[in-house]
Amino acid sequence: MSVDTGVHVSLEEAKLLVEYLETGQQEKADELITEIQNPMNSELFAEIGKLTRQLHDSLNNFQLDSRLNDLATADIPDAKERLNYVITRTEEAANKTMDAVESIFPVVDTIQKQIKAVNPLWQKLMHNKLDLPEFKSLCIDIDILLKTTDKESVRMHDLMTDVLMAQDFQDLTGQVIRKVIDLVREVEDSLIGMLTAFGLSSEGSSQPSKPKVGDNLVEGPIVNAAQRDDVVADQDDVDDLLSSLGF
Amino acid sequence: MFSPEGALDKNMKVLVVDDFSTMRRIVKNLLRDLGFTNISEADDGSTALPMLKEGSFDFVVTDWNMPGMQGIDLLKAIRADANLSHIPVLLITAEAKKEQIVMAAQAGVNGYIVKPFTAATLNAKLDKIFERLG
Image (cartoon, rainbow over all chains, first blue to last red; front, side, top):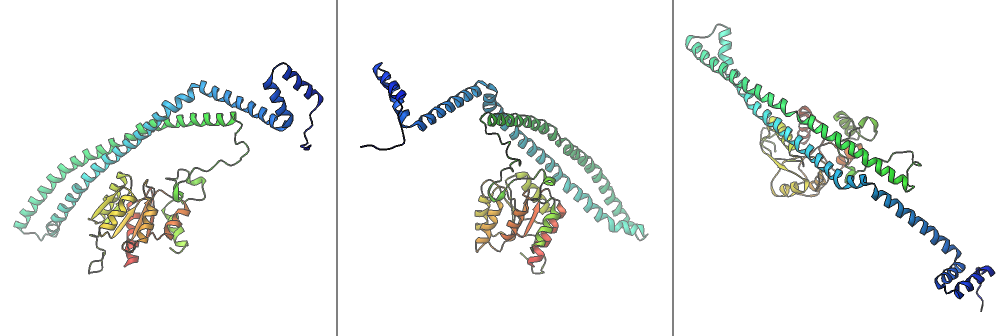
């Protein structure tokens, strides 16, 4: 019974096979038989073997590059801490500022109320229509008003200074954010290096990929609205868009 | 919500929803400044919804981007619940893609304010919402 598989053994191969068997090289003989039967497969295995070795060597090279290790184990956790620091500092500053502002509002309201209370009698005085008892009452009220305003404006001044000082967060958070930007740049370079080393660089694609969006297209604040055509620039744009659609 | 004289009842129960406490504080202050006195807070759509189902709220002001349940999904849940669907909802958010604005309008939002915003804008949108419902 003969089956034509399209595979033809050569004389050289047969001789080599006998030689292997006579010298007890069973493994090599088996390899040879496999190769004769499946020339394609053995080429494939050889290629895979070569690639595996390349991959192994590349991975070893990366492990030897301790910078990558440092990035993963120290710098990136450090960056996360830094960014959390930014959140904390900005929240503190916002609350400090709002504390001061919330203290100022009632002070301003009080002064306004007192002025409004004094005004009727004052107007009468301005029109020469004030009698003596009213005049005495007006003097007392104005005295109170002056003392109150004096005291409260000192307080407001202090509170405004608090507001001013609370803005110091920007300098500190700015410095921290700069450091994180540097780190991100380094990670970006390393990633590009890795992609290139594995022959996966995206030189072919001309368009930079768009940033990731979440559920419902969520993307957070847009930082480059001028370069995009899918976002609105301000509230007027929002209102225009909605009314153009009949909402 | 409307007092017998027909004016807007600023005693109405308002729920302010945002995952950043500073933003909740700002909105609360602005609403107080406009005369609203009955303001509650929630830090996520997922905590807001049970509050709405339980207590008779008249108005919701919410952010979009929140980790548990987004504002858009809160809006949809409100509109889908027969007991809540009448409540006007105002979105105040940094999300600024045109598609998103349309999405919100189609989901039944009553107003859309993009951050950063001004007190004047908030005031104008509130007037518009309650004038439309009157």
